[in-house]
Image (cartoon, rainbow, N blue to C red; front, side):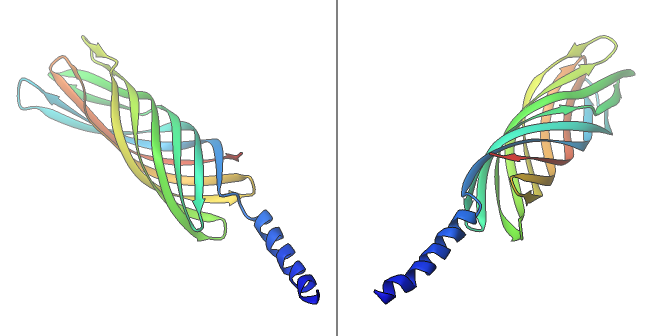
Length: 198
């Protein structure tokens, strides 16, 4: 009988500890802002002529996802929409070409582990579809093109909320052809944001 009552406080302590731990899975949403560096390459399809230009611009990101915890490690799936402002200007056949990625929608896998108290590091791999606006003095194109991206980031949990910072590398070749110019582009994106777990 005494042994039974001795074990009771231990069982109670274990149950209270489990109740206070972070849930093993949850959904989340959030938003962020960032900086994009987009590099565009224009190639003349009729002669040996090409030009590269890089420009920076702001971006706004909104996202929603799910998170599954495996002790120190975790995996997640995330969908996001990004609105871009970076515009590059190149010249082929003495005609100026303006290239802008207007918005993109993507899905990505996130995997990482806890590296400190309420702090996690992670890597991300995903694919997205982007809408471009390309113009010169005589022609225009508004292609919708897929691309892929890889990146890494840090996330800090604050109760039911979190903040994160992330760097992504986005690659897309052969966006469109405008007149005699073939356009390709890739970019780096740095994002800072936060959200709420539910």
